[in-house]
Every structure is written in structure tokens, then in C-alpha cells.
Length: 135
Image 1 (cartoon, rainbow, N blue to C red):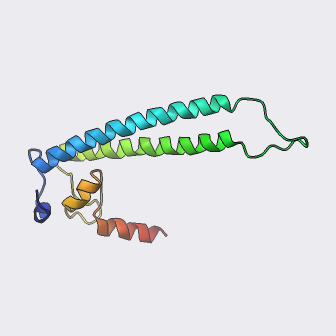
Image 2 (cartoon, rainbow, N blue to C red; image 1 turned 135 degrees about the vertical axis):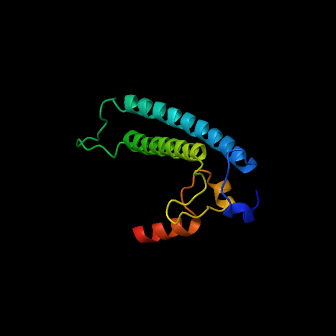
Image 3 (cartoon, rainbow, N blue to C red; image 1 turned 180 degrees about the horizontal axis):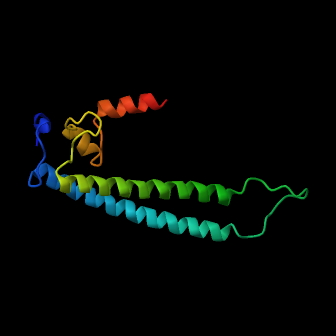
């Protein structure tokens, strides 16, 4: 499908949609695996953090690097799980025939954006405006 075809509705048999479905499945698998690895890493860090507190002579401990790393990895795992949910929603939109429509302005999302971000729910204009309004 060309960029000029972005004004058309995407259909299930459309080559573009078939490719997007495959890409979404690939990304979903990758994010699931990433979330599983990161969750396992969080558990390992939590177990490692159960060691006795190693404070200095005055009883003060510096910021626990294991806790900091555990929080960082936990955040990454949360982001990966959110991506899995976003991709599942995009696959549901594909199944429902609603894929590629901006949830804000209800116009087709350009092909280039969908190729870059297959789970996109907004066109660039609406996505940018939303980001500016949140500041």
C-alpha cells in the first residue's frame, strides 16, 4: 500500500495489513520474552538484596545499589508488559477492521507511521497535540 492509499480503509486481506499483523506478532513475542527475562532478573535482585545491611562504622548505609537496580529493571519489565497490551489491542483493532484509524480525529493514520509504530492509536498530529497539552 502506498502513502496515498492511507485515506482508504485497511482490509484483512490487504498486503499491508498482513505484514502489520506479522510485525505485531513478532513484536509481541519479543516484548513477552523481554518481560519474562526482566521479571526473573527482578526476583534475582530481590533475593540478592536480602543479604545483611552493610552500613559503615557509624551505622549509615549508602543507597543500596541492588534496590536501585531492582527498581530500574522493574520499571523496564512494566514497560515491556504495557507494550504487550498495546500490541494486543492493535491486533484486536486489526480483527475488528478498525486498525489504522486515529482514536482522536478518526482519520486514517499514515502508512509511514504505522510502519514505524504498528501499535499506534493516533496520527502524528493528534499524538503531538496530546503531548503538548499534558505539559
